[in-house]
Structures are given as C-alpha cells and as structure tokens.
Image: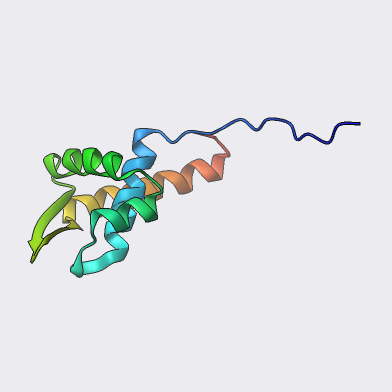
Length: 101
C-alpha cells in the first residue's frame, strides 16, 4: 500500500496580488521605510522580482525610494495607500459574494 500524498495544485499569485503584498510590506514599515531584502522576505518573492516590481510601482507613483546612507528604502505614497484601501474593500466585497479571483 502506497502512502504517497496526492500532488497539490500550486496556486500562483497574479501581478495584482504581488503588488498588494509589496504595498502592504511598505505600509507596515511606516515612515521609516523598508529595504528591498525585507520586502522580499515579507512578500515571499525573490530579490530580483521585488526590484522589478518596485520599479513599476515607483513609475506608477505608488511607492517612492529614498537613499538612506548606503541603502535605498522604499515607502508607500498616498496614492499607494489609497490603492491598498480600495483593494481591501474589493476583497471584502468578493468574500461576501463568495467569488474566487
């Protein structure tokens, strides 16, 4: 008798979910900002994936980058906070109607 576990279907995050994870990491860091390596850990993404996504978020004015001595720290902007709040409202509405996205 075999005791192998059935293969679980991997669920990959879409770009919107990755964006929200990065914004949440920046939001939780507060006004001090957060390093790329910490975003990588909190969002469970590779360093390179975070760098690429942060560039896009900076271009969209959702995140800003500030030089702090030797490092760059990332902070969420007002526009990013607004997007994050709207997304959370969307998630709440989706849960109410029991739709999976």
